[in-house]
Length: 282
Length: 310
Figure 1 (cartoon, chains in turn blue, yellow):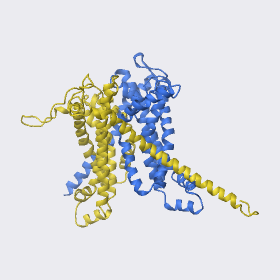
Figure 2 (tube, chains in turn yellow, brown):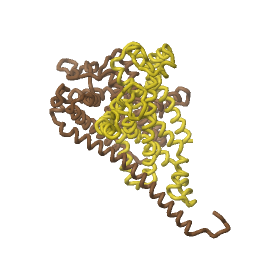
Figure 3 (cartoon, rainbow over the protein chains, first blue to last red):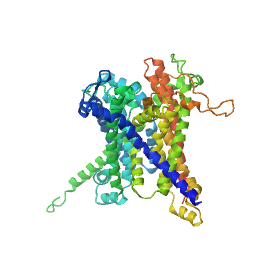
């Protein structure tokens, strides 16, 4: 009996360890392929090089970093106000019965595969942009709009949780001082739930930076520095997604190195979101 | 606010009216933003249905991809998706539940478990394409599994593992300590307590997490593309059931494959209109599958929450 108990504990510990060793594996394999490459061509040339021509041995990922930056920024410009307004509305103004239906609907929104968002963007949004705003249509603008909608569920559900976790006397206190409902929300509830809301934005940002398929379909994937929001662009993720299928040699290493940069960015974002949400609990 | 004068009633009424209008304006803004999301979702689904529904037929489900849009179908795609999901579930479910149990029931506070904890939270946010790179490094180059069902399934299994772990932990944590104490008081060992009480009571939550994880894996494309499975597959993997003695064959694990979202992506990338219709039809089926799984998961969660009262 004793031995069996010990054995089961050891087995479970082994399982737990093997599932976290994924992170170690990621680090080992991706860094093992990517870091020596960055070292070889120099971090400066890799990060700030403006030309990506694998066939000529030119590996500069600045256009992709800039592309990722603009698309994410655009997505946040759309996603933050819309998501926050929606979270506030769900938390403060929606009758409980309606909220019990709306909340699962938001979960469903999060469950839609990214190829379907991409399809919709390609079939509906891209022609609209091309007709009314000009340019190729496959552009940062189209990508940002789709991505903005894709990060909505993340922002809505986490900031709503943050608002809901506030003690009820915050709101009561605000209202008792004669503030209107909106004033209470704006001056009391939102500042109090700030760290949770910021965490939701950071996680949404992480999701936006990491999105691949929809971006491959909508952004147009041109490797050049985008000069306007109607230009097509390429992100760090789409760079890997498009070229990995046929890459070999130093081209493959360069793509792994792109993954290293992406991994760093995501780790920084995740850790700050975790720190923020921990502060909320305390 | 001056104390010298009596408060100007007209002024104050005006301010109150202004504040009320402002309240109302923000209410409208909130309502509109909430509606935009849902209206968009509905137009998206309806649009997809209008484009794809006429194409749905038995022939579409039972044909291989083809150069001719009207002859093409998704047979190899849905068979591939099913087989990959079997491997995914077989990877993620035992690992995820085991890790979840360990972290909630056995864990001692030390640096190792702290490390596990931090890693789990971080893993959940790693973009799927990074898992693709990992799979390429480990399964394709190192273990030489090739661009096979095994590689695809293992990759997606790792991808959803954090979700299964988190769901397991949350539902185990919801079980009150009195249950454990009652079990120990009756002389049960730790493992007996877990096997006979903790696991059955948390099974609803675990199942929910598992289904949501699998529904995410079904729609996931990026890691599979990275592994190199973006190819034209007009045949089925070898059958898992054989007429001769062992009756089971695992040769299919090493066969090349395609999955629903990749087939859809493939068709969208073609210039002909006919393939776009096919893509929409494949999208309808894919969307139907994920929404159905999620709705089922939400229903399960609701049902279990209602049934169990501590």
